[in-house]
Length: 299
Ligand code: SF4
Image (cartoon, rainbow, N blue to C red; front, side):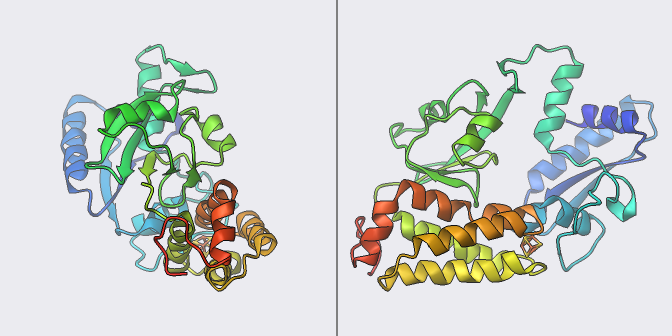
C-alpha cells in the first residue's frame, strides 16, 4: 500500500504521505510504521510518511472529518464541498484522499499484474463476515464473485439475511449480489466491506430503528437534513410501534436526507431503513398491527 502511495505522491507532486487510522487499530498502526521505516531506508525519495490517529468514532472516517482529525481538531464537523480535498485538503493544501484498497490495487497495476474480476471494478474486495457468527472472518473475493461466496468461510454457510456495507449498509434477503461497486449499488447495498449476517431472531424493524438511533446520536450536527432528519427518522420508526406505519413520509424523509445532507454520513444514514422497508415491508405492517413476526419486540 505504501509503495503505490509514494508513487501517487510523486505523480501529483505531493510533499508527504499521511496514513490515517482509527486509534483502536494499534496492530495496523505498528505495522504501517514499521513498513514506512523500511521504505524510507530503501527508497531515495524525500517524501515522509506520517501515521496519524483519529478518534474511535464512525463519523471520523468521513473524508472531510478525517482531514479535520488529521489537522488536530477535536470537534469534528464535515466540511462543505466544493472545494473538495483535491483543492482544499490538509492545512488548506490540495490532498489526494484514497482508501488502502485503491492504493493496493494501484500497486498491482504498477507491478504489471493482470487484475481479474469485472472490467468496471477489477481486482478483489475484502469482506468481513460478521454479525450473528461464531467468529468474524475476512475473505477476499474477486469482483466477479457473488457475496454468497463469502459464506463458505464460516460454519453455517446458508444464511442470507444480512446488512451489507457497514453500519449504514443495506438490508437484504439475498447475497446473490455481485461483489463489485456497480452490483452493490444496484442492490442498494453499501461498499464498505462488511457482510453482517442477521439470524432469524433479529427483527428487521428493530434493526433499522437501532441504526437510525445511531445516526441521530453520532452525526456531527452541522447540517439540518441529517441532524433533524435523523431525529424524525427515529420518531417515525417509533410511530410504527404505536400503530402508524407512515410509509410515504418515511420515504420522503429518506429522499430529502439523501439528497440534501452535506456529507456521506447523511447520505448513507438512511440506507438501513429504506432497504429494510423494501425487503421487509410486511414486517413493518405487522408491527403497526401490533405483532412482531420474530417475537423480538414488545409491540
Ligand atoms: S450529513 Fe450529518 S454528519 Fe454530515 S455534515 Fe450533515 S450533520 Fe454532519
